[in-house]
Length: 231
Image 1 (cartoon, one colour):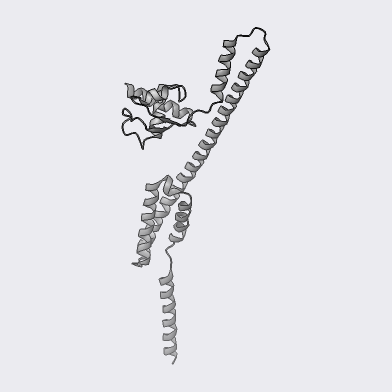
Image 2: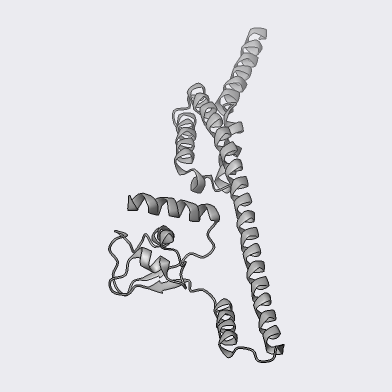
């Protein structure tokens, strides 16, 4: 009787141990799963597509070993590797998001400074017109020139341009209402890559987007690219 009861207790304990093993979760899975989910929410797939895809492949391999083959040990090795990849990717995403935010703020400040400069220039021109109007014997030609200048300043710059027959990108870039600088043509080229296969061949009637809110660094890079192409 005692032996039978002891055997029954052993069987129950053995069943509990086996059940616990069957439901045990690899230790690294609980650490890496939240990181994978968090990176998906932080647009890691858009910012670092290759790295994020590699992370998912490693994690999914661990999932297959854990759920299909029920090999906890092998699965945990892949979970640990996925955790290491996730930590590095998380650091890269945080740095990139911070850099993009700083760049966004810098561009906003540049646009605000440019708008203020244009406002001050317009105010100075209007003051000059009022001063000349108060002076006797003022020159009609000079007044007309000032008025024309004021009109040009108040007119918004075009954000698109329709190509004419025989025109080139440097010619378009050199137009007064575009950039008044032939070396900035790479800005137009990069903004319209979907239409321009060869920057030396344009077609009449093409409508190009004209970038306006570009940074000083982008302008320097465009001039550098232009000089290389002319060599």
